Length: 139
Image (tube, rainbow, N blue to C red; front, side):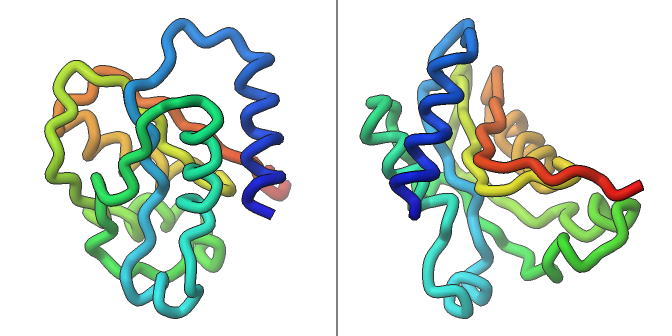
């Protein structure tokens, strides 16, 4: 399944006009407890294939999820930002780099935004969000 999703993402990326290819791909990290529960990180599995096909360096351990939060899907939209605040840490220096954060699904974008903030604090000059699927807000 990860191969199919990576291929679909790469097809979309090839259709889009990117001004610059990222220096790195960073998969959305899972908290260790969630990783044990799930058994794998779906974003990492997709990112591995995207990295291999695009020759963009994959940094699977550059960032960590340090806060074990309830899943965003179970929370009202307004509470998601507060839930995810302070959830990530990155030790790597990204000064002057363009980083693509890869995630499987984006709903509100708050998780991606929170990780992007951490990457920018570590020096990234540009952060792109690469997602396989986008959910829409119910009216």
